[in-house]
Image 1 (cartoon, rainbow, N blue to C red):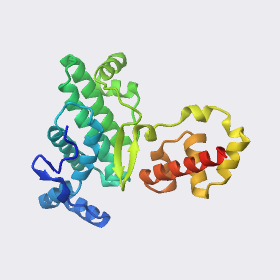
Image 2: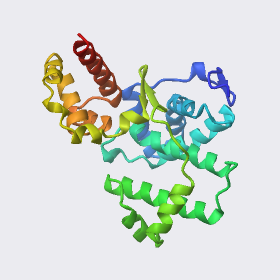
Image 3: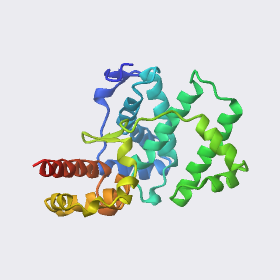
Length: 259
């Protein structure tokens, strides 16, 4: 797959526009008011997000052009359904929508066939979960999904499991300002939370050598078991910044402990 070619689906990716924060906010207000030109400009200004996401599917046999088109569908759905009052960044909302759209396409075209009824059940559960999350700002339980779509929870779990594709912890999810976020960056560190390695004096000395913000990030990530997204929201910076600061802090701690 040619994921690094300049032209995809007739679009010269080297000339894709980049919107400033002010432009994004202005266009979002206009498109929500029904301005079709603003909607078109907003979509064009976010196509780089689709490009960054389809790279994570580089091991797929699907053509990059096809994945880009499917990713654009996910982007458009996300933009049309985005609620500015939710208090989340557009990219935070768009990324899972784009990934979900691509995964649905890959599942439907997978050589390992899953029955239509199972796929229908899984998709109903996924849509119910997405709608519930948008309305309640939290993930629903399986019981809540089952109640919403009127299907037994056991059948929902079986259907969702049947359409799942294996994902590596080192698969890239999104890249912002040159900082790549991986699947493992979005997973809570429960193991380290439960262990008593905080009592290790050498480790505590290494942590003391970090600045205040780095110490806070390390504490939230590895002592409280929070995801990078949760840390970013608590500190008030982007997840990409959390990822960069965390990696720098761990590198400095490792250098100290190796002395």
